[in-house]
Length: 296
Image 1: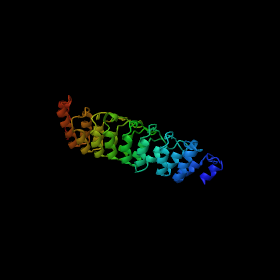
Image 2: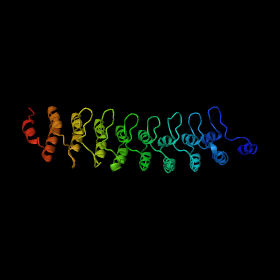
Image 3: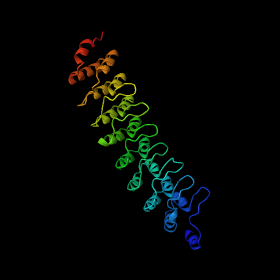
Image 4: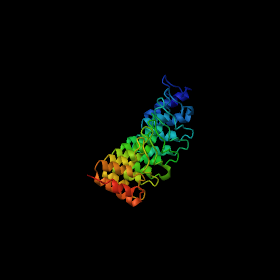
């Protein structure tokens, strides 16, 4: 039918009232032969947008038409960063929701791709974390342009979001980024690090993963003047207190957590902190040890 219309001199680049062209319709429906014909004989349709900003490529990724997507990506002038539906999403956002990463790999190989565009307030990386797509997160992190510390419109970084959502494997992937990751970054609303968020949610496994970063600072103070150790003491979580006091990077702020542990008559936590003060040669150890350990 398309061949016949072309032979009759009919225009192939017409659009309906919604701005949809034949290429939009063919891409949305997965009609690969029609897509190929239109690309060869009506090239101006490639990046044409409908009334809501959606291109043929946007429609193909939205509709899971992978063969069409592959064909469209073969065009060197194809626009891969188009926002559709009033700025809600790009093709990369569609792919971030999927478990399969084959098409995502095609997109990440496009030189003009911007992997950090926010659709509906989220970057593709944050969206993949929220969706629990570990394979997608892993692949997005391989792209050199992916901004792994960029906050979304809710002032949450990818690391903080992964910690809050309870995705330990994603937290580990981010920690493995080394210097590329701002491990001590504060989220804006609560001015807390991911370490504090892990403690608030009682996630010892998250705590373990975060402490594996060489630049972790245990003594960062949140909006309420709490360090990670003080927060763990107030939660009366001896396992987390013990873990924070292990390793080469002992907390510097120990006296206040020790006093809080003592005031709550938690002997185990108080003794753990006391031993840490002794090990660190803390300047306040002797006076606190002599005057503050009266449990009666």
